[in-house]
Length: 99
Image (cartoon, rainbow, N blue to C red; front, side, top):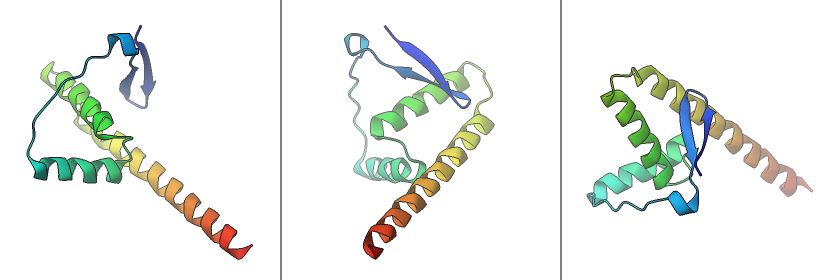
């Protein structure tokens, strides 16, 4: 059974393993390198996470929904969360080094 929940303006689907389908796609190496940069830059958990979000947005766009601002807001939020996490990790490392 799929469980849908909202994180900000975007729906994410928790996939039940029995309903999950693997889709293979061939892409150029440079494209994968760019995907990896975006995964790190915007804090996606994996390439698959990025691809699922991209497909979600693209399908909604193709259905005539306005998603551009929603995508920008979502990515800005992820960047801010990543900055906070990064700063907290650095503070933790500094605290450990001082003890």
